[in-house]
Each structure stands twice: as C-alpha cells, then as structure tokens.
Image (cartoon, rainbow, N blue to C red; front, side, top):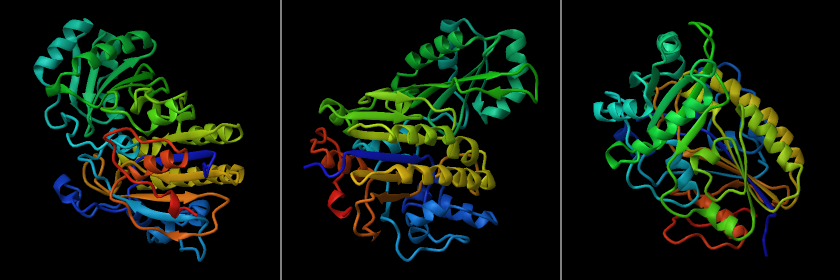
Length: 396
C-alpha cells in the first residue's frame, strides 16, 4: 500500500553542505556553500528550515539547532562524475553519470564549431568566451543591436549560451539559432549539456536586462529514470522551474515555467492546493544563477530567507499523506574562487505531518536515494540500469 499520496521534491539549486572527499580533484577543497554563507552574513532568518532540522544537520553561526526537528535529515553524496545541474538531477532520478559533459571554459568554443554555427545561422558570431551573462551584455549588447551579430558565450558549466535582444534580434530567431546550435553540439567532441537561449531587453549599457523567456535545449537523459517509471504507471509527474529543460520533458505529465525562485514556490503552493497522486518536482534556480555564480553571499542568504517564507506557506498545506523532501543538486560556494559550481555533498530534509519520528538518518552514497524512495512509495519498479536504494522505511 502506498504510504504517501503526494510527494513534493524541492531542489534548492546549488545549496551544497560541504566538500566531497574528491573535491580537491575539482579545485574545490574546503568549499561549503551553506556554512560559508552563514559565516559571511550578520543575519540569517530561516525559521522554517530550522524547524526542519537544517541547523541540526549543519552548524550555522546565527541559527541554533532545535531539540525536536519536524522530520528527518541527512547529507547525500554525489556518485556521478561532475558537479553540474544535469548530472545532479539525473542522478537524483537514478542515472549514474560516468562521463562528464564537455566544458569550454578556458578558450571558448573551437573555431570549427563557431564556423559551422555562423554558416548555418547566417550570423557573425561575437564573444565566444567564458563570461558572466550580465557582463557580456554590457560588453557586446550594443554591438549586437547595431550590427545583427550574435553573442555566443559559455561559463564554467557545460553550456553554450546565445543572447538575442527581443526587439531587434527577435525571440523566434533566437530560438531558431539555438536549435541549430543544439544540433551541432550533439557531436561527441562538442557535446555540451545545454544550449541556452538568453533573451534580453534594453538598448544601451546600463539598461540591459535578461527576460524570463529563457529556453534551455538540453540533452535527453541517457536512460529511463524514476520520472518515466512514474508516468508510465499512470501517476502525475508535475514539474516546476527548470525541471522540464533538465530532462528535456522526459517523464513529465505537466510542466510549469517559473519567473523566479519565489514564483516557483508560489506555483508549488498552488499545486499543493490541488488533488493529485504522484510527484511535484521543483527546481529553484535563482540561488545558483543570481547569487552563487556571482559570488554574492549576502544575496544568497536573502534568497534563502525569501524561500523560507514561502516554505512556511507550503508546510501549512501539507496533508497527512504528503511527503516533502528538500535537497540540492551541487554546490556553488559564493566565497570560493572563480564562478564555477563546487563539488559538495548536499542537504536532505524530509517531513510529513504523519511522521512520528525525527532526527538524523545515515548519509547516503548517492543522490539517487531520492528517485528510488519515490518509486518505492508508489510501488513502481525503477528502470533497468538505475542506481539508488529506497530510504522510505526510515521516514516513519
């Protein structure tokens, strides 16, 4: 018999909880996204996360542990190679990634790739380097508007990002160019995890702003995941935020695009007011995109406080047969060097109003305990070749 009718899995994108044993291999020794945020700010008001046991799991400067947390907590270690969004999410749902996605951080994309992209799109390409999205607009936005050239750049992630002004370049043209780029970057030597359309508005430096019409062209997962198993068994699989892009729509029955992390939580709250049976899978990207990559610990802390307020609203709506799981997909320590993700373990918080127990449960060797637990709850077999074991029996 199914234990929970609805499961809400919320990914606080990039909220790492300390360096993994192999972090030094990635240049990330000593990283600790959550801990260093706490150390870097004076105030940190997260009462609902505190109630769920976050300060019991990880010592925080301003937040005391509670004597009786609402539920269970642990840290999850990443089994896959890498530290990017797709690797983390795919592993959560059962895939073990042993070959990292290609990155072009040091020197930009190869000349051969850029030449083919230029010829097929009919656009002169400018940029072609690793850069912040806001900085590259300040540098090249006016040129793109004046000439019709196309800004292409990358980051520390396995991504190709293409900018287009919504008024002069046009959204449809931007999406067309990104579709061509996705096709080109399917070659093994050029294979990036995502091609991202980055539309913006404004006409001059100081006025450029990226819009919510971003679209990610992701690789399809290498195999079937817990999401496919749930969908095929007739359960609802509802996504909020970037989940659709990360899985390229695979295994989903409904998708909700978010304008921000706060909006994503508002959408999740509205979904919690509905009747459904299955999974609501949420990604909240602002922590990573707005604060982690920009190395802004203060902004990250304030975003966590905004999330905590909305989390309180969600907690009030949970029913006896609901399960909430909060986790992350990698780290992005805002006090670390560079702008890359960081190779960290992630927090895991689990709560249901029906739980009788509480406290720390054993840390897991893989993020895939999440997908395995969801599948176990709904009595669905995980697809062949997936990893992870259920911890449902520990959540009592």
